[in-house]
Length: 163
Image 1 (cartoon, rainbow, N blue to C red):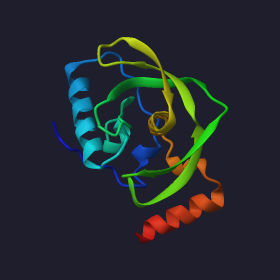
Image 2 (cartoon, rainbow, N blue to C red):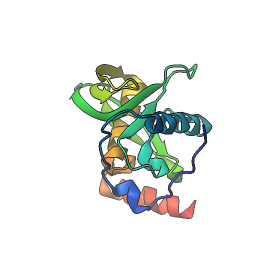
Image 3 (cartoon, rainbow, N blue to C red):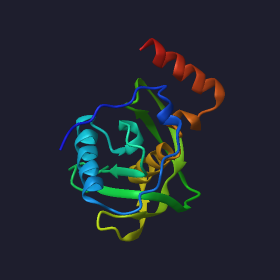
Image 4 (cartoon, helix red, strand yellow):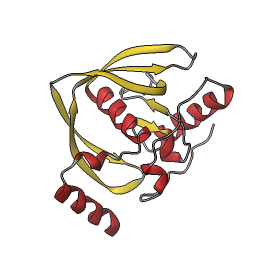
């Protein structure tokens, strides 16, 4: 298990929608293990494979205080989201030194392939829901700051270039 390096913004791979996972193999499980180690080293509450240059629909999430509720997801998609919203300060190790308050649905129902290769449906809430939505954005080639208006996004990117 390895801590992998992050792609640096504006690497084009961070803007690329990635391929679906066909089946859960030992290589996929090894990548997930590396992703968990990398997420813990940040420290962060989630990580998507494209952030470390792996162009597959893989993500890991653990928003627990104890860091003991790791959720491994392949091909995650949002089935439903609440109308009630939450705002969290979001950041990315791909764009160091900046963050922004992002508003997303407080709850999300997500369908994904789990570590056993079983299609799973799970309800996420709070920070876990925010993290899952953030990771799904990465898998679609979208960064958290894409959720900002143009002026705020441009200010954030200017600040990041200076950092």
